[in-house]
Length: 49
Ligand SMILES: [Zn+2]
Picture 1 (cartoon, rainbow, N blue to C red):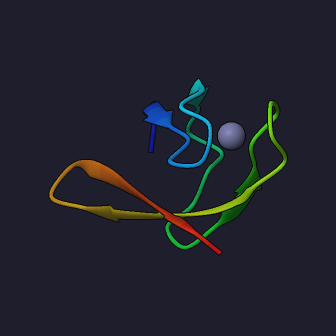
Picture 2 (tube, rainbow, N blue to C red; picture 1 turned 90 degrees about the horizontal axis):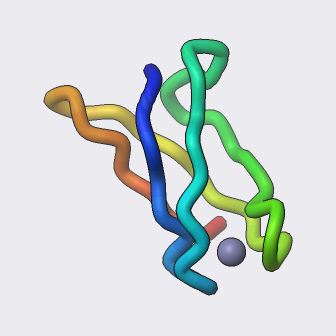
């Protein structure tokens, strides 16, 4: 799902595109934190892994 997320660790805002899938883990490009993205009701939720 496409959208923007904010890293809860450092506050960096990044864009994710349609290649991201529900439950996928991505690394914040600024601080390196691993963030798990889950989708619900059209919103991307971010949890630090
Ligand atoms: Zn970060």
